[in-house]
Length: 354
Ligand code: ATP
Image 1 (cartoon, helix red, strand yellow):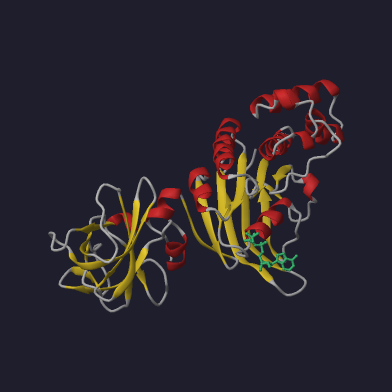
Image 2 (cartoon, protein in one colour):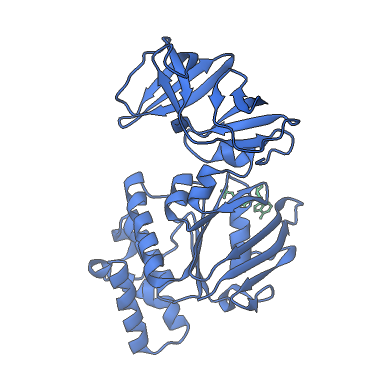
């Protein structure tokens, strides 16, 4: 097993597209590290460079203590799982699993032992004698994962491996991957554009945007204190409300007149924006204590919660997440108040946390 160091990675494709501007990553031995970001941000290119499937323009990649810049994929001792499972259609599950081991020339008994172990871990016992076309999508993906496992690589690289599965199966497989990674303790780099997947899987998450890392942190850090306005707008569903704020007499107030809990030492001479999570706000009856007047634009009932969109004091589209116990109809006059902790404050000019 091994950690992975990516230093000053830059990738320019032959047609001139700069896929990765500058990426530094320091992934710990045994870590489940997620790369998250919108389509085209450079996640896959970074992962393929680590795998050796794409040659970086500049920058270094180390797996363990080995500088692997010039090593072909097969010599990097990593296993990759893609969105498309690429099983051999004519081989039974057992032979699909054994294939990479036989290719390495391992003795028969060793091949059998490793296939049995991977089949046990991924619960493939009943499927060992079936060919891929007789397996469901989820089963095929489990075989693909097991095939990565049998090699006992130093690291797993996963590129959106669950994208083609339906929602329920995806959730199950997510749990399975997390459990497995914990059991094996093998370093894993996992690429996704799905923030729920990133939050639930990652020990740490790197948020990428336009070929750069915007933030690296635990799921909690990334959720509580997004490092930039980009991260604030990207993480959370619905994401943070971004409100223009002013500091006066030690108070922090939105342009719409909503009082927020100010963090200490806020600068006065800069234009600031507060990032307020929808669950840190509350829709109240009109005139309730500490509330300001607002109007319900829409209410989306999701079963276990309601997402209100409200207008207040000239700021439109403020999103509020609440338990469905209190209901306010669309177009009614209500109150709006801040109930949560200190919000994240951003400098409008730098777009970064103050
Ligand atoms: P997605 O989630 O859509 O897969 P991504 O974050 O993984 O996106 P990459 O696939 O790394 O992004 O692509 C980053 C940028 O590089 C994109 O603008 C993409 O169009 C471009 N790109 C990717 N592969 C090539 C290539 N072979 N030649 C030229 N440009 C490419």
